[in-house]
Length: 553
Image 1: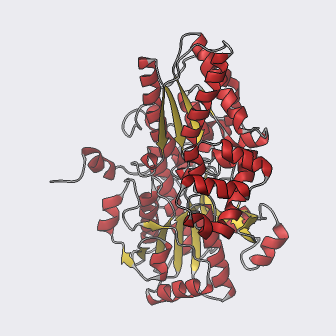
Image 2: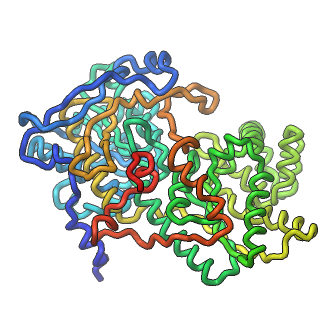
Image 3: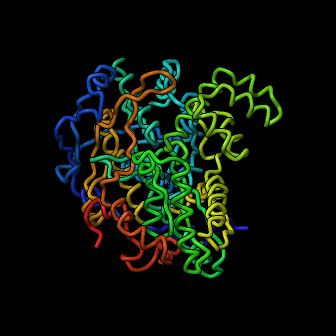
């Protein structure tokens, strides 16, 4: 049986739109701009990256055709999946072939570990064509191995030399691109001829700055989630008897929650950065939720939709303190805690070792949440927030608060609930037209950076709210985006995450409307992503990007 859908076949024939500098028979020339400075801790970053700090920003423009020699390049998909990854590889492949038809591209299998373990496949035209405009990372797979140890970097270098690879392209998020910067610096200091280029990927939307307007995958993922949220909103408005609590991906920032709230106009949306800014407690959030539920019930609407970011629990100041204490406890007494098989015994053991305020909070949490807070940590030693059912926590606590209000005679409604977590549903969709175009342009740009031997750069395409032909491709020094953060007790250079700007236009748009959306029923039903049809439907940008660039009416 054929395993290709009709849409699959149609999408493979889609020709991504390119900036006109690339979509022409004329030559391409590189133009240098001003040197870049780090986002923070500049002295320290300069000390750590003496060879790749202060590089100039570069852009590509139409000019005389440059004669390039054949170039062998390697590509790695790193971290979680994001729609459009295959088009980055397609753009990279086509760009290398544009520079010289004898250039070759190798895909390392399973992420960074494929590079150190020498697992690869040469990517030919037939393979690349099979994956154009498709979702997922299944062409070569992905992984989360970090390339931080000298032995790893040396093994990677040896494997690249064996294949004649002179350029390595790492497609990933902030941590993966930090790795790219570390590799670039290491090879430069050793005088090795291996260029390292990064490409910005994450559906969370937190890899952006003045030069990187948006990471790829965010557009598609938020459209997928918004369709699902819109469907639930319509169901809620049809049945008129359920409150739906929807947890969305976004551990470190609430960009997804904000974009989806703007798209669908739900009744309640928590923005983690606002919670932290206002130093709200868990009770504060629950009270706000209960007040909205009660206000809607007063007018006969015992239904609604609420959005909760995945990482909310770490933004609540009192919860952040509790989690930090629990992380320390797990590090010091993890074996003792694991040896206790009864959940109540674990709860008692832990509560005795907590500070008084944290102890009180921990004991007030539902048992299921308390248990989830002491589950196995991630490789960074952090609690795995995606496994914490924050949506259920808020449902339980809101229900308790409503009963308290009922006893005071201030609430007479019903509170029936459903919870949802939308995560993987948005990571591997066919990319939207925007992401298909954007990722292809990022890959093509990466090929030009590699061919011009610009190591330590991140592929960048700007002016994204304009028509694709007017986009400006170039490269940003990765060190320009870095600062120093404390990780597992040590100072580490990392790319600074972009949080929701509470003074920015996207958040202000939500703040201006949320009182109206809370009590009224103003749901918008975006429907599925459109791939074919009028440009105003198919090529629409995210509201976040449009508002930030003053193109939203």
